[in-house]
Length: 56
Image (tube, rainbow, N blue to C red; front, side):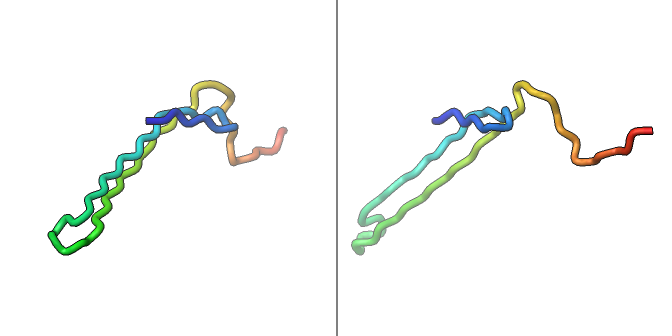
């Protein structure tokens, strides 16, 4: 498990799980199963809008 932090103030956990099995089906195969996921949230800072409105 890792903690991810980016320059735009998004922080959150990331997890990588991997299973490696040699000779899984009794024929000298190599079976690899990997799973990765992450979740991030903005902890501080101002939210920047992509829409720029003209000032009156």
